[in-house]
Image 1 (cartoon, rainbow, N blue to C red):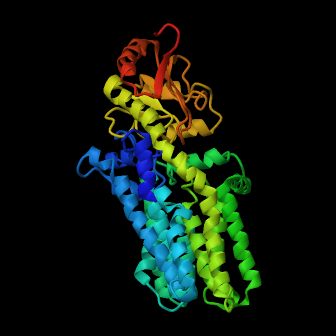
Image 2 (cartoon, rainbow, N blue to C red):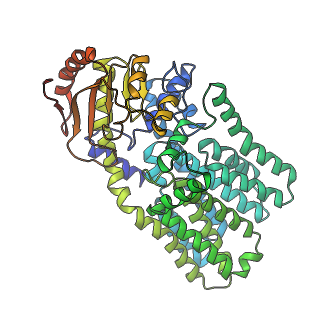
Image 3 (cartoon, helix red, strand yellow):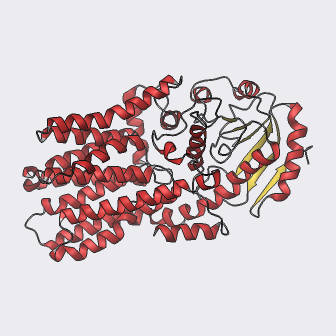
Length: 502
């Protein structure tokens, strides 16, 4: 399925490999700076543009920038293989490889990984596939521990890596540590707590030592997108919960949470089983994600918890329905994977496949203009392609790559706050979604035209990018560069000059 999706995406772009999200290049830009001895998207300015503590370090351009561009793909293939193997191990451990359940196990093995978004998330090229693998390792490790056949290396690896790939992994890792303590494994419980907490606390301390906030700017930006900072914490949680339930992924997670509650209330065998502790972990992790996590953005944020809770339901079904006809167990298990398969089918075969073309037509072309034609510092609001491989300063007005810009954008700042920042960083032009960033536009900025993608090819925020000179002095340089660049634009895009700049 992964190969088919990639082939369809490459066909859409006319033979050019691209990721479905520009965000992948944020990690690549971070890794490039790390390789040069800094931390951020600009060597001269520390920033925490990545939500993952570990992933950018896995992408450092050891060989070349061109090879580095494929490193997210390579790591995601690794994560996809690990996730599929762990999914199969969970099915075997739950008994789906034996007797009458085997035929259902084959269906679950074939369909399940696609249903819980493994191939589609691997296409995106970010940390989510590896995070899902670490989360499934925790689930399998706990299952084996509670059945009396522990795999400590697997369990500890999951507990360590889940938070390092994504902060959301803390919930599963900490609950796993509590389960270990409850099994009267105090020393190993201490080890688990150490692995879950200390590395991520050291990372937060590292950010503070750079003069940054303890949470990455990208995490803060996502929180600010969902709720206002001035909200009390309980209102933030309610707002996040209601926002998540407005998404199809949130509805599925809520449905599965209800299913888990029904399992507990209806099955005495589950309540008496050692796997009852696994049920607690599933309910706690799913509930925590609905209250504090995020849903959506090409379905990548819910991937790990969807994989865990779906696999968890499959694992618990034979316990809940102990003594029932095996066919009934198998049919319910198949239904559990068919629900997300049906819900996500459209986005997986349309938006996901079309999105690389939109990134190629818009973000890649903007990157070419900034690096090969203007060759000066630039302001953007969609960080990624423009920052990666760019020797000049990139001012991120959205705030992922600039703590200062994030604070301006998420507080009640005076309009035009981007102007002074552009002056300080010698930014001569800006390429922004004007509707998004109208409050940031400097008072003396001059719009010279708009770069337009002719069709909405998948998951791109806007099809129109406004080009501004940040001072009247820079208009001639910008217009001259545009006249050189516009004839090189691929089919499907065009540039409209504003009056007087043709």
